[in-house]
Length: 409
Ligand code: HEM
Ligand code: HEM
Image (cartoon, rainbow, N blue to C red; front, side):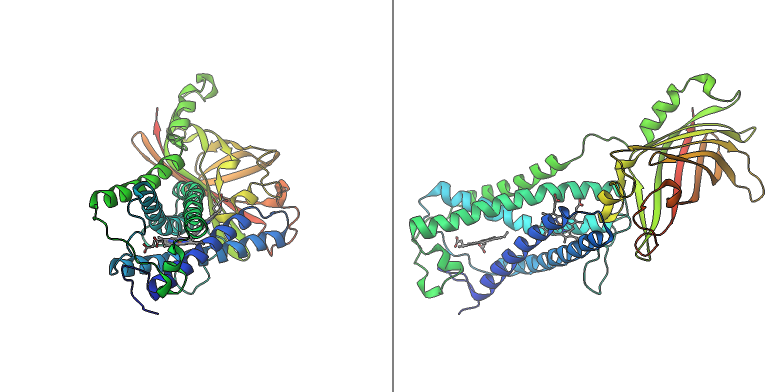
């Protein structure tokens, strides 16, 4: 078998790439869907999800490398000529689908890897000894969500293109009986001789543009609603709307400009960080007395925690459907020794309220403030993860941290 393509048939290398990448893509789709639909009730079930996604990611990364090599190889190759150049629409459609698949075989694993890299924490690992995260990509729950949205919509598009492509191959084999499949699969000598046809560059360019447009439309479709703008605008609206008498005499409202609210849990012995995308904070603080009040509302379902966000917010843990909100209502106390302010009040999670103290550092710069702090809570106080009575899967201590900037209103 010849390694290179000619005008009649694909060579050995192109065939190897075509069938390996095809098989691995189908495996990745199967594993992704299987993993996404596994139950996550027990410890064993969680482990099964991690294991499935580890294989999914590893297969996907293999697709990425093979697809890049395949593209580089294809660029050096002659393309077998269309067998029915006079069937313009059909040839054009096949070419659009090929372009869509060329882009899809890179963009799908890439967005998977980007989502894996941006996800705070990251539970199931790519099964290889090299790095896990792509360089430059910041750990950012919002970014991870956006890549995840693309990845979750994109596979439908890729699968749709594959269905069209396979339908085309079947049609050529069963209806046309024209040997198209032989060019890619069968013995090369059985490949038919393609007729001569004029070369219409414009059609190739249009097919490429259409292929790109398919993925551009996918990106638009997967784009989130215009900025729920996590904390900042929502927080400032709430603060501005706070009734004046809710604040102590001299205290002024402070609007959160930007910030993060995160948790860290120890999962299987490894610390894993997650972030809430949606939360609001009403802050009243008087720099003169260094005291005030704070009222934080947290949308539990907005937690991104590696690939187990849904089980973390599911019935065994935070149980977002039953308790969609957590809150922290506290008085801000002036700094004691050590120079840290303390927010002392009630923390409500999963419907249970406990007394909590959150020490934090506050730096004032005119009307701007930067604050950050961490408190440790015990998940058992809130009845969270009651089915996980020891710490082998999920540790008892959970660190809740925030880091924000606010401006005096
Ligand atoms: C599993 C069933 C599949 C069958 C039966 C099949 C069949 C074929 C055939 C017969 C060709 C040659 C078309 C021609 O000569 O004009 C071809 C080309 C191609 N296939 Fe598939 N294919 C399959 C799956 C896939 C998958 C999953 C992908 C990737 C997403 C893929 C991507 C491509 C691409 C990009 C080409 C164009 C190759 C080139 O021009 O270098 N195929 N396929
Ligand atoms: C050929 C490449 C790939 C295909 C076709 C693919 C396909 C899929 C599919 C079908 C799902 C399930 C989507 C759903 O539940 O709606 C999924 C989920 C996922 N994939 Fe991939 N994937 C690929 C590569 C990768 C790679 C390389 C990584 C990471 C390194 C990755 C990470 C993930 C993650 C983390 C999820 C779960 C997403 C979530 O929970 O939102 N994928 N993928």
